[in-house]
Length: 193
Length: 381
Picture (tube, rainbow over the protein chains, first blue to last red):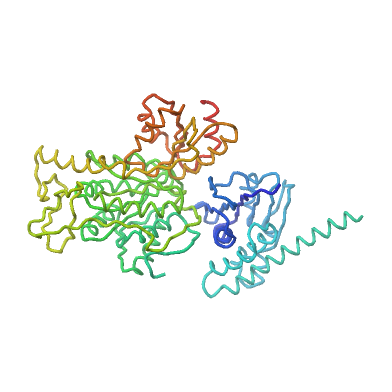
């Protein structure tokens, strides 16, 4: 049974654009996909440089309690974030992470990785790692539509950087599509054997 | 953005929605000192007010910020300030000045955990009694408690309207959680927003008495500098505004200050019920804690318990009648608030022993999870 409510935690270092990623996700769901969404951001000195997080809930109906109680999706862009938040993922939860920055230990659930910081460096803008991750989240989890996410990225990023950011988003999105195809192929191969 | 009313659908924080509500209500002066977690209100006002011909001033501290909005209001502007715990404490003396001079203005307190500097970045609801009694002397005040960014938009307009109508400072008692929560906010067309502006005096300017009540019990308020005789003082004063240090003058003035709120409780007090119809247990809550309450009601109903929520929109004056009426027919109340018992005592007082009153409180720094309400429910009812 598909849950109509998705609880998501995005975490990383302060400065990686974690809260912006959360904002893009929540805003895409609210204004683009016409759903309900809440965004709660961790705030304050502990968030700068240390583990920073954004909690997003997306639902068909009004969200009573806007805090994540058990994460359906956990996105980690730093080891500190992974260590701090991994205990909050639920049994059916999905883990998405930056494969260069996070070493996963002791988690046996569904997980998907992308070297988003390295990809951003290849694009010449390390700070766009969060937007690449947003594209990856969009294709892997389908919690928001790609149309809504793309237009929200364009509306949310600084003027003049829209094109670059959309390109970054698409890189992440396509990477996710390829990852899913690979998993499907593997599954089909196993079924055929 | 150039217009005062930012019509459209937005995904915005409670702090920004509060600022937009103020602009939609007609606020054109904002004086404040930045403080976490209220800074975003000042930040947004500093960008938006110049666009609509308003004035933003970052004052040297919160004492001056409060003074500045009183002065701006006397000069005819709808005015607001925003702060959090430590700044709210500093504002107390001048809030008293606004009360005795009957100067309309709006104060936003984005509550964080105290006492003192406490937890600057983490929320609480520990200033609720301070909002009622924080300034010295006996008085009545209006305080509201929003539970979402959409709610704070409308409550800020409501705060201005009540303030202008009753010539009283109105306090918006929000919290860090609502201030920093992003959610859908729909801002309607300007012509759909009802705004109230203070009654201006008519007649001879030299015979004007600035504290002579009109037929509704509220004195019309002249704009300073337009030629009306005005004297404004923090001392006990007569209808002309002149100091009158007598027991009689004090009694007359106090009757007006307190009476204008007490006699209009039905107009001022707003509450909202959720699944109250057949409720045997009523959760009483406000601000972010009412979101805990909403979730707890549904979860308790799934377990077969008849639970409802009474959300306080107006906290002061306290919705005494609403609690009394419910107390006569329900088994008990559970007050949910991020302090160790403030509104809980008001509920207890009004229930008058007719229903059991429990508190689900918290020392501050985080939201109360619905599970704690369910636990109390299962243990006591």
